Amino acid sequence: MEALIQSPAFPLLDEDGLILYPEQWNESMAIEIAHLLGIKELSPDHWLVINTLREYYFEFGVAPAMINVCHTHHKNDLWVHDLFATCLNAWRVAGLPNPGEEAKSYLNNM
Image (tube, rainbow, N blue to C red; front, side, top):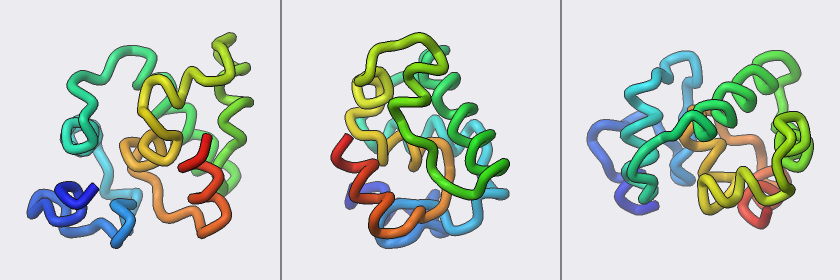
């Protein structure tokens, strides 16, 4: 996480490694953030999660229940966690802003 926060490539991240301006996010940023978090390659499943999170956030303004993301795509309950190590990392790679302390705790402990 420290590398992500201090990376000169991402001056627009907060102290938790979350983007300040999600409208500036792009796929190249996602790939770089994923690398900094130890995810070597974003598979089609990674992109499915990323796009689902972004669509949900921009429609409702909040983080979805990750179990619903898993079930929507007919995957097991730990699918997002298995792909990103934590659901909060999925949120980071998707280029979404700080969802608040309660949601961060939920996303980090999934």
